[in-house]
Length: 185
Image (cartoon, rainbow, N blue to C red):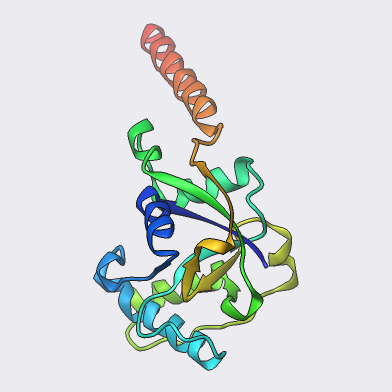
């Protein structure tokens, strides 16, 4: 199955040294995410995929298209600020055997995460994926018990999306309007 993922550069070094990388609970972004991640591990086990007690690694359905969709998805997840933060990450293009992949709806996963973090009781994850979700990049996530070096087809630096110049132009437009409004007073 073709997938792509954004990982810290150290993951590539570990792949070169050890031949595989596995999840580590100490690297989960927030301790409050752990209950939801444990539910993903449980679902993977129900589907016959053993994470060996570790959190899964996240990827996205489809190849690395080297376009805005990959960059924007990565930016929404990582919120990199400036060239030095982009330089920490790489995009890996993968071919992973189907038996190591659990696909799920990223939208439903976010709903589940929100309910886990802020809800009054333990929510249930809806594991269905709507057919339309397969049509849009970044809407179907893939979880893996490990990342193996032979699955890596390519590695490239994470580059900023082209949205930044547009945002700058919009900000400049507002700044000009503020200046013009000041003269109108």
